[in-house]
Length: 385
Length: 218
Image (cartoon, rainbow over all chains, first blue to last red; front, side, top):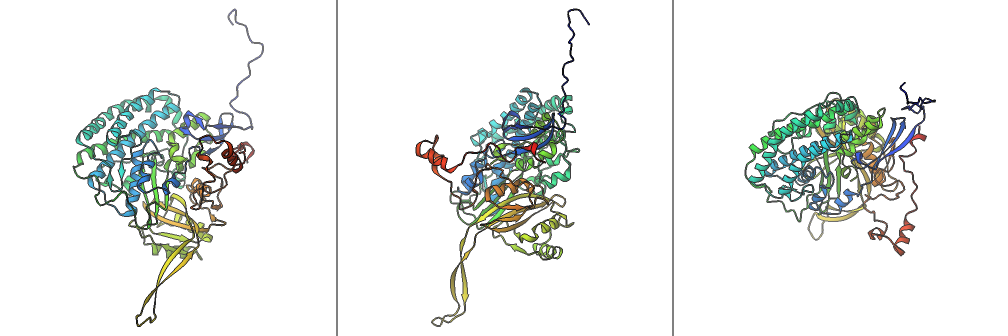
């Protein structure tokens, strides 16, 4: 012991991470940056370990479905943008696809290609911002998110120049798309897609091989494939468990059968696999986009037979679904022959993916809960509707 | 996938006493559905999930539908002689009683087919249906949502609470005959008589909701 350094008479109280047998109830959220909006989790903690977790929904509830039932079929289209405000293009597509099924509408070839281009661009910007947010949840403040948002902003600029709005695109219509993309736009989009792999290489090297990221995500929040299927988990979260189920391949909607792409699959179903899934899916999206740019031909983008204003589909019902960036996005519509849907139901992927949140979080620390929640990829506009 | 009639006969063979009706869908989507009686709904669901040829292991969507009392016009051809003309159309109006419905969209991840749509029906006064959450866990949050917005009680659901509305809310906002309680919500800041009416309508909210008091629960 060096001079001038006084030894403490009593040993300092030792910090224990466990409170033996005593649970402490903590309300995480609704106002917390890592809950991605207004989402609340009530957790019972044993020290730092989560023993119980109950999600609390509804802070952003606005009865989207009732509003959809009190407006016309076309009137709901811009409102679907507000569901998952990161992916308005895929929301538009899922709704348009369901109405097209309900009324039996054909879509022109160029419109189908434009839809695929826009959906894959949406997937790129959704996945890239998810990776940024997830890193932010892990404590890598700012920088990775800004890197991701730099790329996302380029894609949003594309959306803005085509649809007039960065996020609330309102671009698709039953039987096609609202406006055509000119050659300049396609050339601009191709340029962004050409440059994207360079960014992705850099980003993957910086982040996905980072030792801390691996330590924080591997073996955290494991999900078994049996539970994932039974609990209705879809999208990258299901495929991270190793279940080969991609609706682009199953339903063959749009022109996806004309494209060659692979479906990446995970092995362990943990958070790292879910993270990798996004990175790998972006590569496949880039390949789909490159194929689309070579295949797209000039032509009309709107079916001229569709009367959007006085649109009254025949009596009946239809369920249409697409592979959204977050999972299966479905719309269930019942028509009674009038101008408004009798029943308008949204099947929100991020809401149903939260079914297993408690199962994945039990036994992990509070800090891991944030990472697990981040890897599910939720948007409250869609969860609460 | 097999034809609907074939699935129907197989269900009826596997679950004795089950009453299955095929509900045809006139829209170009041609997604027909099965109406299943409430007593056997869970057994039928288990059969659909476990049958090796169907393996409908993925319940994608579960939702409610509210059908109000309706006047259904029926035209019946009646054979009678009226001034020497035979086959006179007689229109009769029949009152169909309203009902609530739960609709499930099933897919198979194992066999990659679907959708198979099943629906169960109940009356609007005391709506109660068997929960299919024990069969497909994906119905857990969705049945809670149906309970919240349509008021269908799901018998056998592990945790049936309101999910989107707050726990003290009393009505079911997705029902077709729902009217918003008053116009006080249109006031940006309720005052005077509007405030008085608002207070009358809603009792003060207790601080706890169903997710709280975790430490006291088993």
